[in-house]
Amino acid sequence: MQPPVIVSCPTIEAESGVSASDDQSDVERVLAGDISAFEGIVRRWQGPLVNLAYRFCHDRGRAEEMAQEAFLRAYRALAQWRKDAVFSTWLFALATNLYRSELRRIPARTVSIEDIPEPADARVSDRALEESTDDRDLAVRRAVGALPSKYREALILFYFHDMDVTTAARSLGLPEGTVKARLFRGREILRSKLPQLLAVPRLKEA
Amino acid sequence: MTRLIEPEDDEMNRILSRKEEILPSSGFTASVMDAVRREAAAPPPIPFPWKRALPVLVAGGFVLVMVFVTLVVAIAQAIRSSATAQFSMSLPSMLAPIFALQGLQRNLGDAAGWSVLALLVAFVSAKLSMRLATGRA
Image (tube, rainbow over all chains, first blue to last red; front, side, top):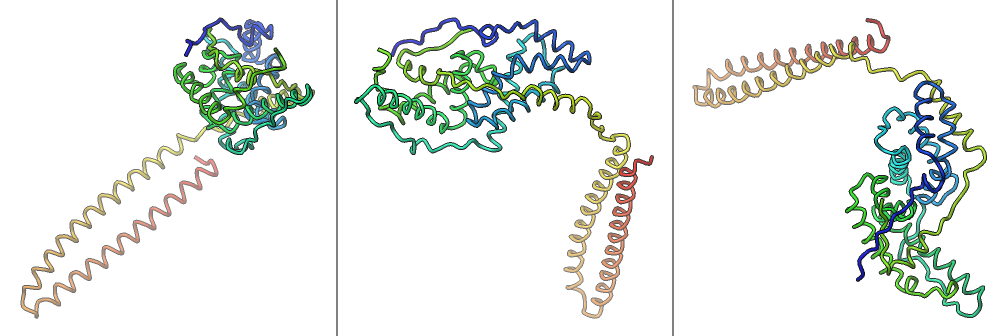
């Protein structure tokens, strides 16, 4: 087994071009009583927060409701943000915590990992191949949704944060080692449940 | 900041990294800001009236301790009286009714005492909770 490759990774903030100072100045304005400054924070982070919620529940309406609740909780707890951590890290940790407890309260609709159909072996045409790839992707995503919550959450956060274990660990409030172990175990389960799917070479992109 | 990639997981990484981006609906920001404004406009939550509740809690604690002590004393007395009863069984039969009468009187006295205490506790707790609810000092 080859050792893992460690590479540097840009944060969501860097990717989205959001400046940490924008967040800080908006937070200061809100704390000084200017509620309208919170709109800047909502505009900057609504996309990531709604998308993170969507990855947890796969329901657009519910994702928006959960993201709205996350913003409301962030507003209430804004004074508790210690500026030694990046605002987005604090916001994602708060949102992740909320999403996890919401899904424990009302679980997302998932199918058992045993019931996930394997896609048909389609090597007839390009269209069939494309459909097969889509089926495979869907099956893998469904399998992730059917994993036990601790592995599912680690996988969701890891891929949401562009395979950044450090940020995923911060969002989950867990040590990096624990997150790595959960990722490893989660992948093992996926590999054991979907051996054929993950072994299929990707002919389309060759 | 680090990222972890295991080469054999490339396929899984590719599938799971593929972004299924959804855009928040157009009214999302407005809806969040409405909720935030409602939150800001709402009066602050009423703090728990510790000043008023503290005497009640202290009194409640005192009553609990008293009940516990009374219970312990009652149990001790019961043990003692059972020992006396064993002693009385060994006495001549003409003395037995006298001991039985004494026991009955003590039992009646205990029951009356407990009833009065229960009524008193119920009255005090009802009075105090009404005072707390109406907010009158």
